[in-house]
Length: 203
Image 1 (tube, helix red, strand yellow):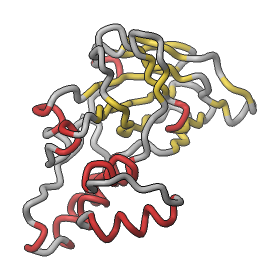
Image 2: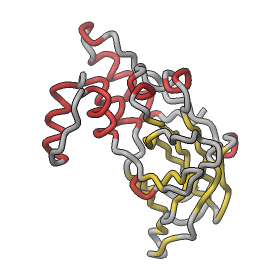
Image 3: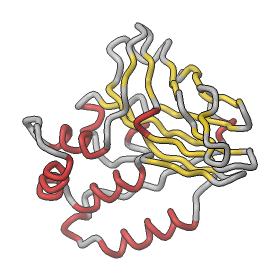
Image 4: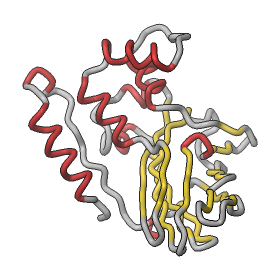
């Protein structure tokens, strides 16, 4: 498993920081394998990308101690990127698309919006800053930290390095069969240019 010292330290600190009042939500360790070991993967341009969709409640509860994501129709996808080049690369979460069987392109959903939709009865139409403040009032601190820590966000991956995180989508109405992940821009930071796009089946 590719579990970093940074991640181990995070879980240890979070465990001791959480009071008994919040003991009901468990922080679950994110288990990660080499990208090529996942059924959904692509090896191209010196980069290996692996993906694992948490496409049912049992799988979701391996990583998040809640059933709200499944009940609200969210699809978390673990993404592992291995950079086997001699230059660093940059990957933005918002440029990792889910292409449904119908051809519809889904943009990823920020973890903040996933939590707001999961824990509020009515949607909010506020700015990002206002959403963050509202979120801190209605979602327990350890849940917020867990989602923030595990979400993909922006990654700068060093030469011969690996990084990973979870990207959130809406579960396709037609299911995952025939769906693809599409990454149009992985950026070569040394050359100052984008690599060719990546696209591969998610199932």
